[in-house]
Image: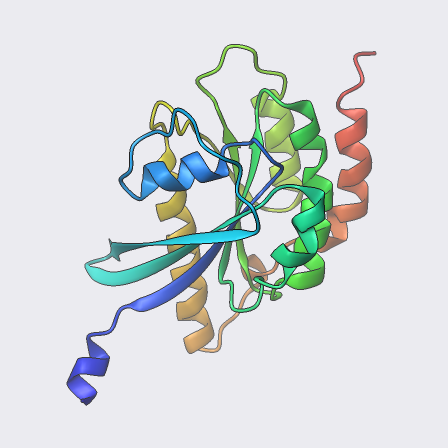
Length: 208
């Protein structure tokens, strides 16, 4: 029994958050080997998929929770923060509103997630030509929270696997530090920057 338990993979629970239509469902579907969804129905409530990966030769099971982006489902979504070790926060590089709303999502994460949850920022639809959120602007926000930013495309399969593996590595590194009781500043999101980032997001849209 002990040997069998030792073979069980470590489980990481990942929430994929962001506004409606930023591409969360397509992103997850692509990563889990389903190709690109040309048409789909917006997620209602919560759905999840699982995928096995390996890090440094060790098996890990990712439980990836697809959440509804609509405001009316926000309360339901917060119930699933418990036990989450990682969050992939997504915006649409062609959607100004989805970027502005990152401040709301970050505040929601601060209020509901564990203090050492690992967070990765993803700008989806980088294959599109009608970009409105410049990389430099998004990087400034990411830097203010000490977050890693990856631009990706579920449609063209650009950086999809890389994003999930980067988050998995962050979660595993944090887990290793916790096991050795050496939690560091890198495991804590810079929530002190939240109020300022809210203003910066709005100001960054000014063309003056």
